[in-house]
Amino acid sequence: AQSVAQPEDQVNVAEGNPLTVKCTYSVSGNPYLFWYVQYPNRGLQFLLKYITGDNLVKGSYGFEAEFNKSQTSFHLKKPSALVSDSALYFCAVRDIWMDSSYKLIFGSGTRLLVRP
Amino acid sequence: DGGITQSPKYLFRKEGQNVTLSCEQNLNHDAMYWYRQDPGQGLRLIYYSQIVNDFQKGDIAEGYSVSREKKESFPLTVTSAQKNPTAFYLCASSSGEEGQPQHFGDGTRLSIL
Image (tube, rainbow over all chains, first blue to last red):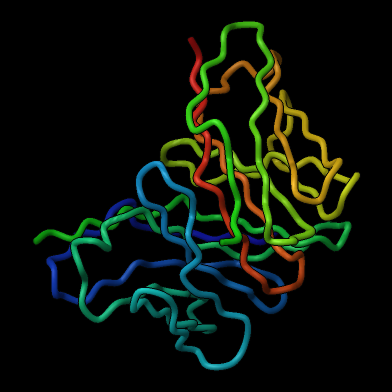
């Protein structure tokens, strides 16, 4: 079965410093990986995805993620954090069901806190 | 602008009562999903629908029901059989094509009176 893990409940970083939010996955076959961000009392917003191609994927709001097949990781990164980046971040992996439909399996989320 | 609209934003349920959460999308997406979000547990899939008039149970379907009579609409009913309904409920849609992301509404927070 497909699974995704976010080992850190919370990440703290100072504004202007680089940030990394970690995600590891376990899949059979080629992984389709996604990152979403959630602000308080809002839905999830899509940031970026990895399907195939370059291991460094660029997304919205200056975020990028690095796909590492040997380490089965898909860490979210940003070179310079903003206070407004403070939010809950979810990593997700695609799963295929018996009826060939697609669904997403989400990690438990990592809260990012950027201090001024 | 295209998007997903969930209503109401806040909902209160009395014991023994069924309540229905609305989800409407104008993205012309075939697939729609309902998730439940509890603190520290991420999102869990309740039901999904790949096409009109068809839907499937997700991982935690007990105590919930859905319908998909129109492409744009995928309402979720939380029945009295769901003994712990307090949660944040999120609706999502996608084109259903491989590799395409899901788009989310802003959720409905359900509480018990």
